[in-house]
Image (cartoon, rainbow, N blue to C red; front, top):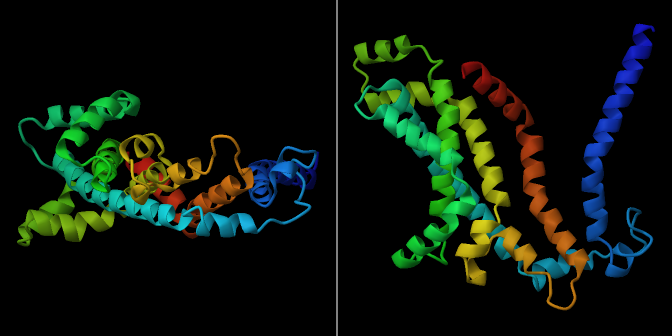
Length: 275
């Protein structure tokens, strides 16, 4: 078999894989532009016979999708910033400083990864209710940040261990303090690992449903997944409207992929090498 034939076979396999990955997105977009009759009729995967752009208009006007979208943006951004800041400082203290209970604290953070969120849901509900935080923005931001920190610390500690200590020692000799050394030297070095942790945190927060559906009662504080779920009626459901909401919810993740695809790859490779 010639080299040209092998390359053609490889390209064919890659095209088939790409089409397989893109088909769910195609189906979702066409799904959002159909009526219930088409969705449950013979035209399941074909193009819409009547392009119902009204589904998107209705999602923004009567469905309140814009409010849910902005709430999800707020929750995700605050969680990413707080998790990145706290994890970066905690990981630095756990790997670069020597103190008595360092191993114990690191074990507690590691244990946080193993605890299922379902097991913590009821105690968390009761604690937030007694503190008067349930049902508002803080009632979701705090759990999102707390549950995102352990994984971020695991990613960052592996990266910290690969940084030569001589860099910090040279900075200390020049009169640089701990905080200035951390901000001026360490933070720029750990950007790839911080990007990895931030991307995972954003995706997990953006797509989270269980906490948002349990800890939020008011329509004012709902996230996008909960808002889309509320489109389902008790007796009848406009599935095209739900499809439009799902497309809107998917757009930020696709946009992040196109804008940060190189950064995602570099950060994952860098984090693996440093770890």
